[in-house]
Image 1 (cartoon, rainbow, N blue to C red):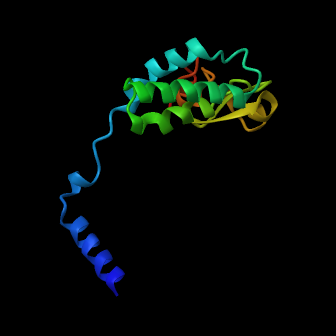
Image 2 (cartoon, helix red, strand yellow; image 1 turned 45 degrees about the vertical axis):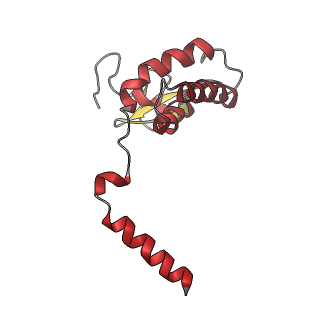
Length: 138
């Protein structure tokens, strides 16, 4: 009975808080992306990575270091790690593949079979923004 009363009081206290007080404002993660990409490129080579897992682990160390030293908001860590996880770095014969503005990492034959176009970069986050020829736009 005591647990139920404590839980109910806790929920009432949360309901009484203004909506803005419940979550801190997130820093703008998108504006940090170029700096994060530059720092990761300096420490981790996409083209020569032995495999995708090692590349992502290397990128994760850089991202976590930036979050620790304050140059990247802690709430941006996950979004930045996903950028490097969804890349073709360290994957032999793989590329970013854009199909109707959506990106995935595929082998060239699979991308062509699905009617896709090779992405402009190795990272899905910006691979489909525009094709080198301007043939499609997001």
